[in-house]
Image (cartoon, rainbow, N blue to C red; front, side):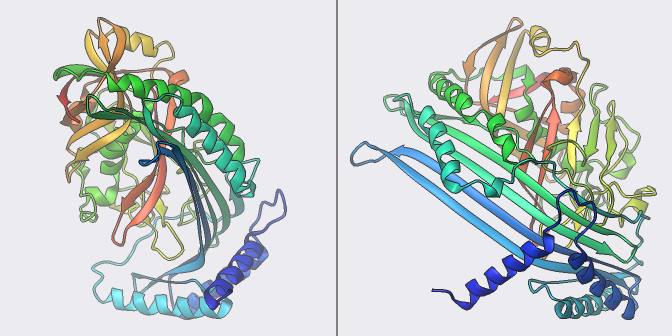
Length: 521
């Protein structure tokens, strides 16, 4: 039965499809989107706003999963699929009136509603101006009229759900081909963001951003010993189309994690103490995210962001000072191919770029927006403004943050060869970090012992802890460019109300000396 809610959703989806449709190879925004954007800009001018921007956004999110596990009563394998899809469509308007911000949004995308909501944003700005200590100051930005999209060949939403489930079923069944494997799961997520931005400074920008990522999990059980162990395969999360899926190699890696999860069952616990570590890219990405990317967000460093996950130990007095070893150069980048945080332009119309955060251990730059740039003496924004939907306010979010690769002749094998007693850690595990990103503890997904310069068998129950500056000072080598990989995190939360960001962090296998290793589980 079609009710009013379904009718309105269908109508909105049809309108969104027409608005964001564009001829193939078009380099300019849809004329219909530009007409809608012009309504907000004209209304804001009437209301004496010194600045206005509007974002019209359509979001789609498809989640497909399949779980195989034994039925308690019969022992037969149960196959449980899970398919979900969400979409939303609307717009948000920001204005500056009397030196203060005002923001309002609506899911009804019409000229009349855009005019009304722009007026509402102006009223909010005037109210905010009564308590605004200083007028908002925006760094200059060039005006662009352009259409940009994630490079892709095949629309992932055009591939049928049955084909996607077959892909996941084959991988999950491959994992289960050992009677010690209790359960297996396979999942695939697809996300698209159609976005139009127009500003009173002359920009008109249409973008299509695609993201695709998957996951395999295996759980093995030793009933006699009363223990269970897990192993995961997380392919590089990517901004790409369906053509990326074969590159995930789900079948091949399903076989590998099946073998490793069984080995993990009998792996002895690590012997605690000071050890050298080799951290693989799919593990180190999370350490980079928590101990480098978050603390170099300027709002955290200045104490403006504190409620959600704390502030930062990297305060402005650290600019120009050493906070890591000479082997550590970190870059903020919204241009890297296939990275989750890669866009053409941020949500203030700033063209995506690359900038140095830490240069050979010396802290150089924070992540900034147009409003923040002058607070640290910058003349322009680093393009780090983003909102997670049309209904939320853009604010400072991290870009992709990378650790640059080492010399081309530095290999994983040469890093291992230089270790007498150590551990190689692969994949993400549980972690904790304090409110200033200063003290931390990280686990992983799989661990191998290193003895006498050689990688040995799997071990278990490994975690390491340290102080952030000491940890990065202990870095004495990272493998060359051929080993460099990027991995994403798709649930980076910040702000109140909470907003979610997706970004990638890249690195090569990296060595750290004499880190405190714990036994955990």
